[in-house]
Image 1 (spheres, rainbow, N blue to C red):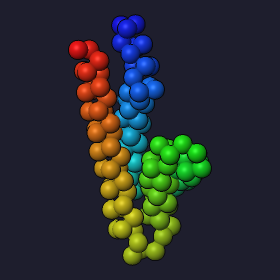
Image 2 (image 1 turned 120 degrees about the vertical axis):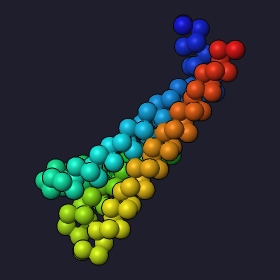
Image 3 (image 1 turned 180 degrees about the horizontal axis):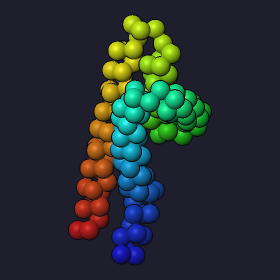
Length: 128
């Protein structure tokens, strides 16, 4: 077990470990946006709070100098803004905002699956 941990740290500067962490982050982000879309529509105060929090966290991630944080940060910021549009926006924009929320959730979930598969293949190559 210790050997695998050392190999994880050595392999491409910790790239394998970063893929595992990114997979978990993307998957949980996709699930959270999906839950925000469902619960935010049912409970207005909850949706407003989630929208503000998501937009704030997204903008903070966009300010991070790490380029790996910018893509999920942008998706999270757009999801927060779309959630706020659903509650405060022009009625014509509501279906568009709801669609963008669904696409963002699906996109993060798909990125998480891809990163997870890359992580598992990397682990598999280490065990051989």
